[in-house]
Image (tube, rainbow, N blue to C red):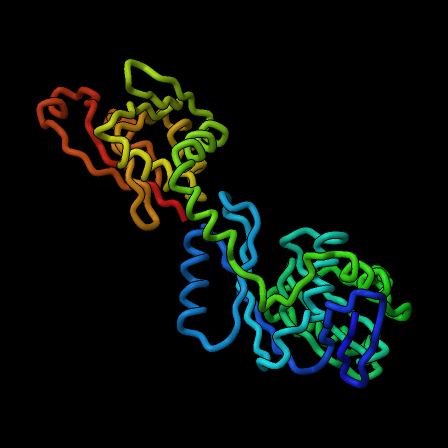
Length: 331
């Protein structure tokens, strides 16, 4: 391992193909993509790569869930892109050994070849990287105050310096040894999104199985064949699947599977004994077509209901059952 430092170069261990850059020539920023599916994240990533002039890398975990996704931006000269960045080594080490994928963290350390360092990240992504003077404790506190502007209030802290209190101590040699022995440690600029091509190829093949499996686990639905048709049952929602409605039904199930407020729809229907005849997601609302009594509709609070009544029933004082569309606000 050859390390290009800010003050001097350094050779460590035996892996000659690993060239590590620990020099003040890199700028980092990261954007967290919240409540975003992998398809939407890939669209954003491709847009940045197509129209941006800097390097971008997308981090994600749990492809079929709305887990955190980080869009990493790195500004660096072309001459340094053959190197592995020390910031990425530290982030990989922490994710493997110390933190979860969605944790915010701060690393402080003293490197013989570069001096005092402060590195901030969220999961595997790097938020900022600073070279600081000797007063590392004061600079750490200033960094924490700066991070509060971005609502990062309680990051996990790690340090290779004994003097830094309230931080978990790390041995820098352990981090470098981790990089030395990990063949997956390569320059981030050389990592290709081969997984994306593979994923996009297989998703068309397994989409039906994935959607049905996830629907069963999350929404407690039953799926069974019936005379060349299929039926999906839930407590308030029952539909038949056939060759005629297959495409539209799959689109609905996929949308429900990605929708964070499906539980709200389910709880609302269960609480008010609403049987869903048709369901449409439109912006911030779920439009639920059902049949309810006028008395029940009037009991619903903060819910818009579209329906037509028969004046004859009203004159007789009867509780009329009407077909209604309920507008349930999701956000």
